[in-house]
Image (cartoon, rainbow, N blue to C red; front, side, top):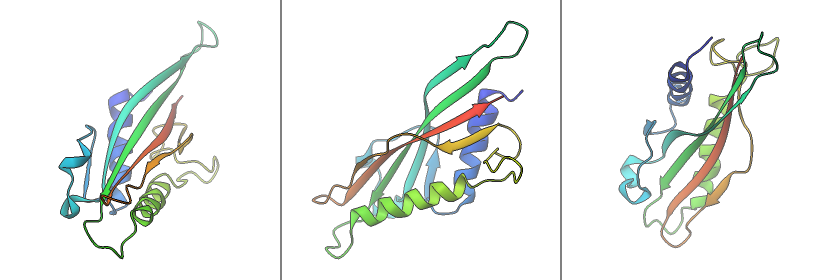
Length: 144
């Protein structure tokens, strides 16, 4: 059974492997600290955990709920759209969590977990006036 740390590191590695984000990590930073030369950036933080034990004889099913803090600063370019930056970041996260198991048609982080997927409401702040876009993206990881 995978540990929480193994899962968190594997998820971070999957996000890094896409090659889209200039900065990644497991500790969120203040959006003001991320400038145009450091973005797009993605920071993964465990925001919740659910444990379901069906019986004392079976190991519990653990679900880690991550929040991906996605930052993008497009600077002062009046022809750039903060919403486009968020859309591109969402596409990158979808690529990071693409199925890697043909039988399950799920992202298993190389067989470490049952499934890792984007699930839930994405909160977006495109910041049209400042050019500093932010999205909070829920990622659910089910550990058998």
